[in-house]
Image (tube, rainbow, N blue to C red):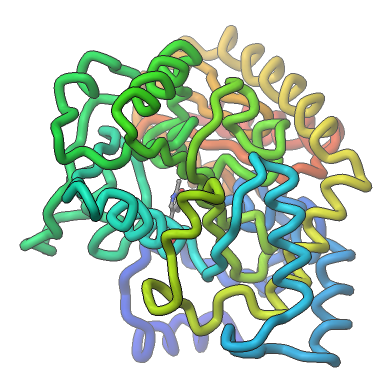
Length: 393
Ligand SMILES: Cc1ncc(COP(=O)(O)O)c(C=O)c1O
């Protein structure tokens, strides 16, 4: 099938809710993807961080292939071994909590919102505080939780019980808390918001505040989790324990699976009938996620992420010295942002033409998140392409 035929299928039959480049992607391997026309791209924003171990990670592919011969799906009215094993691992890697499995970041956050409401039910506490510039998903509740106007436009009336405050501002939270407050949601590093890192002191103070007021501290680790920042979970960089975390993206290495992990005593509020997901935690999805966990451990990808993250940061700092319109480089591990004094979409398009996939968020922040398997050689190549793209502005 030719590119033009695919475009025309989309035009006729796909609901146009995505901005799209006129480009059909056909296959991927490691840090590279190839278009239908056979052009090779270095993917430094692989599927919005979903393909965090690179495209078609061999162990994930093998696990899916093997499991697909045994059992694809079974309802959650029965037990399945792989779901149990995956939950045990995630619990052990985090803070010893219990898991609920679903299929997307928004669903995991939706589950966390419902869990918070259950937690506050007795005292009729329901209000949730979240952060300006945050992103938590596109369902009605998670877009209300999201601190960005553009995702809410046209969808009123929105659910009640949500309040948004500036990020990294303790005073603002203290002022926003009422007798009705039940949870505080935040991303330890805001991704869509422009790679904004939470301050350690701020998180420590939030933890103390939440303990004092019996408020749940929920970290959305949909983007920052699964090794992206050089630790298994981003919160481990700060030494601040949340009560609940949500995960998705890299968890399945390309296969849809998401999770909520909650401290045991809170998790046990979700009794039969309170929440469910038909597809959540299927044997096939769990086999993919178990292979992701194994690969991160066996291939020492946390170490690689730390090492390559530092290398990439240094290379980006070098570019900053060369181009005065680069304002700041920030991030942790392989979750990096390049803030510009000018809009960045044109740069993304030039990089694409030159064979590099990156992202532009908040109009002026280049978001660079290569797979955790990235090598120095691939970083050098990406930096050359970025340099060439910046030069041609
Ligand atoms: C931090 C964060 N939370 C939630 C979501 C929503 O995830 P999904 O698109 O899988 O629903 C995203 C997606 O980009 C995200 O970055």
